[in-house]
Image 1: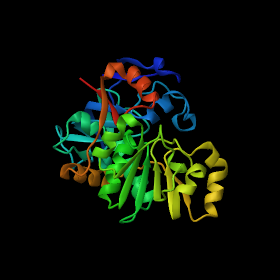
Image 2: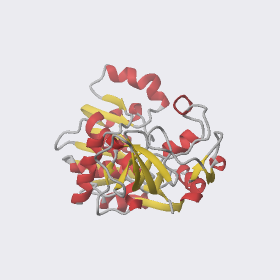
Image 3: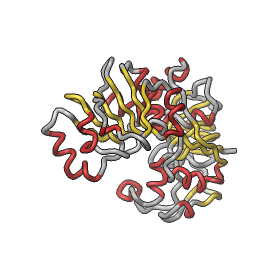
Image 4: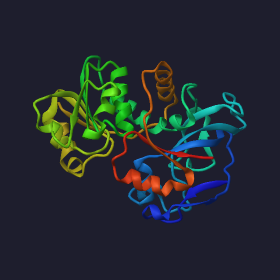
Length: 314
């Protein structure tokens, strides 16, 4: 099969497009003919070697987690899916999605919403699950609370704005650049802050939950913007928070929480129901053919994407 792969860590130039062995499904897996995948920041962080303790030294590696496609084969114990079903979800392990075929555990795959294309479906799993678990589980959002999403136009942030509203937030403020303010408003944000002109941590507004979708702020900087019993949730803790923030949070009613995304089918099914109902929609910034994955990685590394970066598999 054709795939994107790399045989050593490095910049986007290490990515190759060529033949790799077609995987075989285990007893509880689906083999999916991939029609669309994506590039998430974690993909190029792994590729660069920044997550070596997780990614290890075995090569070659096929990057990517998000897949949308058709079931090509099912494992011996799989009864919930049939060949030809349109499915989406995240691959097993830390990669494997940027290829013509990929494996996914049947218990973590979901039928694609009928109102999504393959490209839009591939924009959902990792980013939407991160947003849901960050806002609902780590953020412990309650009805009527005031939420700020930092990086509101990012892949994760664009979902976080919508999911906070779907979960009953009283007011959602999005932080983004001036170029993306209209997009964030269209996603349901009640207020939008242009970070190039205003620092939300210097304002007088206070929030029950601050969700940093792009790891651009820190708990220590944002603590003053939290209400009593407020929560600051981040996908990647700032180095200052690792040293001082967690210790300070222990003795404060304003809590710092870091998160790791879990591949829960019940969460993906909830997101699917919201998509079908029109409450949540994926946002795509750019689409690239699979063989141009290196360019997609370079664009992602610039940090200016509004929504998700999609790889189309022919």
